Length: 139
Image 1 (cartoon, rainbow, N blue to C red):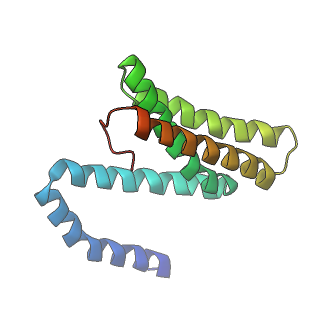
Image 2 (cartoon, rainbow, N blue to C red; image 1 turned 45 degrees about the horizontal axis):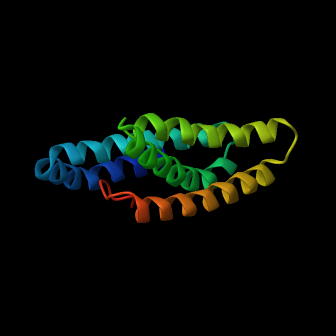
Image 3 (tube, rainbow, N blue to C red; image 1 turned 30 degrees about the vertical axis):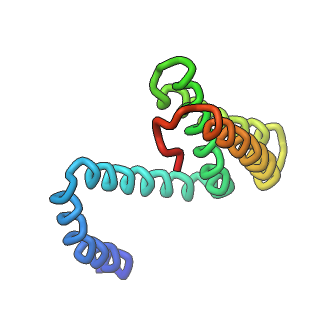
């Protein structure tokens, strides 16, 4: 058995009691944690093998912007925020990819969209916190 397989097996053995206790305490929350961990693991593999590491730094800022846009849009339209947050987040990623496909270096394209999303997210979070009644915690 290889060293990587041994480490993976050790991680599963050590985390199994924590997972069981989490699932017994609050099943749906524990299930959400497991599903999130599996999704992030899959995304990490895709990012690594497709050499998209430059998008990792941007994803945090774009997700905050996307959730905030969804929250504000939900307040005005009544439709759940997920219908707005997912396209808003994907739009930022596609904008970065478009900049890169036009010849801009990946690091520069990421820097442009990261700074843009950071500024927009701060402005929209301030608007959401001050003008919209609290329904969700943005954190």
